[in-house]
Image 1 (spheres, rainbow, N blue to C red):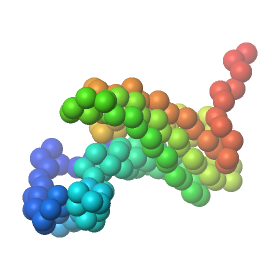
Image 2 (image 1 turned 90 degrees about the horizontal axis):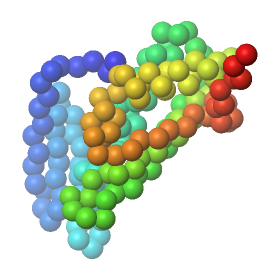
Image 3 (image 1 turned 90 degrees about the vertical axis):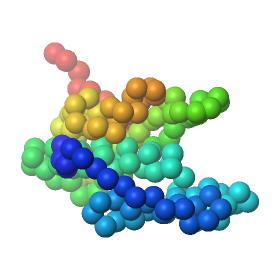
Length: 152
């Protein structure tokens, strides 16, 4: 869904102690660091950036899908939590995402379907993380947890 080129580039420069600045091929930059006292705590850690990237990837999908469904999305936030392995390389083992969507007239079934399509078909970041971690998710629409309508 998010589109993009098949080839991506990055240039990463050490800034001292444990800090790095990463530049993508389109002129954007991100600062990475680790907390005090090991370093200056000048930015997110690389693993935090991966978790944030997951939120951005699936979030962009959901917005795009709901737009095509002509759903009235007024605000949208995602909360992500992850648990790492205890042994190195300490990969993600569990990730949980809470999708919080708001909009007057937003259909909860369509909102859930948009999330489902992102997580099961479109989000490349979740597909990569799913190789090592169990990803679970919940959906809230206008402050209410999503529950499927009873089947008749």
